[in-house]
Amino acid sequence: MPFSFKQFHIDDSHCGMPVSTDGVLLGAWAPLPDAESILDIGAGSGLLSLMAAQRSAAKVTAIEIDTHAAMDCLYNINQSPWRDRIALTTQCVTQWLKTASEQYDHIICNPPYFDNGPQSNDQRRAQARHTDSLSFKMLLSTIKRLLSQDGKASLILPQPSLSRFVSLLDDYGLTLVEQVDVTSVEGKPPQRHLLLLSHRPAQPSQVKVSQLTIRTRFGEYTQEMIELTRAFYLKM
Image (cartoon, rainbow, N blue to C red; front, side, top):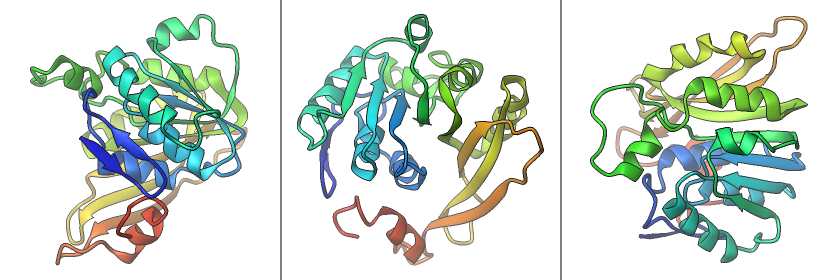
């Protein structure tokens, strides 16, 4: 069903994963304004690409393996004010990497994160959620190769996937720069983590860790959530 933001609309009717709070958080939080080139891996409906275009003057490259999701993505891009700055590629990352040569100032991704367990009967939903379609190792290999020397990569992961993902960073010459622990309702433990990566510096650097709470115990958005997403949500 269509989802309206302040400056664009999203039709995600053919996507395995619909518009989610995770995607909005990532697109609003990632440090994108100064980037001149941005890569959106696993673009889905195009939400992150459109948020990136709204928040920067960058040229955005969106890559999406699923042809049905790519159909929504292309439609949403073409209906937006930034269609001249967003290019869509419908291809799997492994194939695309064989010819990709450009490096990017920022790479953004809301990746598949389930390794095991039951998969959805909806093949597109399963593909969007399970690492069969994009493993953490393939994702990190892609970031290592395509991230510019001073570039940054932004991702969001659920709590159970965090330690395994972070443990792989050294193998790819990447380091965790910043981590935001996201709590859905105040008083609960974090369920999501916003991560900012860079190429590993010569000297170890300290990770900046902070917290974000989405809603109060009374169901209202917190002030920090309002400030973060004000440029996107209609009622903020």
